[in-house]
Image 1 (cartoon, rainbow, N blue to C red):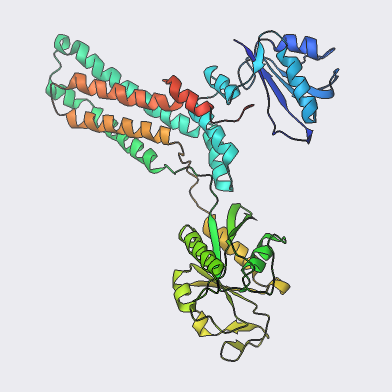
Image 2: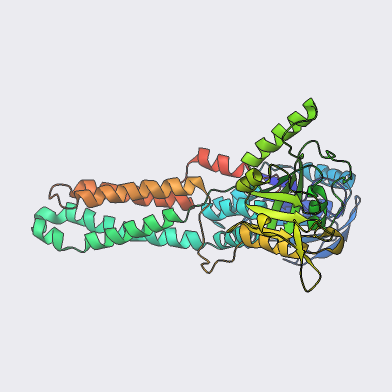
Length: 452
């Protein structure tokens, strides 16, 4: 087998880079590229080479990520240095550049991880919130793998009982009543329930951030509110209405994950120009794709005529400029001296927030509300399945088990039941990669980056 090498960190200038090498030529590479390198396993050594002074760590087989000899090099993150280093390594006979996901593929082929754990690496790399990250870590430690293997073992035992009956029924005189006495139905029904439970734990994997769209009248304070939420002057703000013409996306980093705040052009009953018309049409299109719609209302001026209609379409109402004095028809004074919107703005069941950006009033509470909406705390820590391939295998196994249960009452269906049990077990074994198809493996590992 050839030895592979790749950059394991992103391209570009950085303090350090990581170059990973795996395969039988690692010892030769150490002798040629790293003079006087002490190949003590899993010990970082500073080595002077003709290219750079770098750290090197040697992981001997089979106690390495891929199960092969691995060398990890940490040169300075100058792209020219990295390129020269990889070029010199590739000059060693039997060494070549790695393909996408090839390090992970070798780890799978050498039995260091199973296929569910290999797929979990993809979830780990793409996780954009705490829940996804925690679930990916559980998958990577083999929680789902253990469940699948237990189920497959149960199916194997059922298959063995059935095949034993097929082989020796005539010799020992096992009749229909005796077969019914076997505890097969109960065992198979338990397997069926477990498969149904696994199927319910499927969640569609998506790397898209939740979309929070802010909309309302021109100059209501949408851009200013986004700047306050992200604690950065990301958007241009102006007293001139219509500053925002097209939608602008800004990521908001919350404690448990990220959401996408989307600023939109202001809405009005009539467009002042063709550009205004197009901008408002785009706002309406963006609202249709929103996960959360926030209506932003400036309480320092009269309510826009469209307020009631907009409020019906909103999931949340944010009232801005509450620090500015309002007319008596709009607000009432409180003992604390704060301004509270009058009842026309308070719709039963509609979540609303009062904010004053200059004083940072209400911003913390609004951030906390977004955290609660998109990342609620759950008591259950049950691991969920994100792979459509895995859930398809579970469904196939469930169909086989259902057919077996239907056939169980038929005296002449023992061989068919045994066949269904074998097919169900094969479906489960394909989840962990015990039974694997080359095209499936290529699809999984080619989706990873080079160096992983």
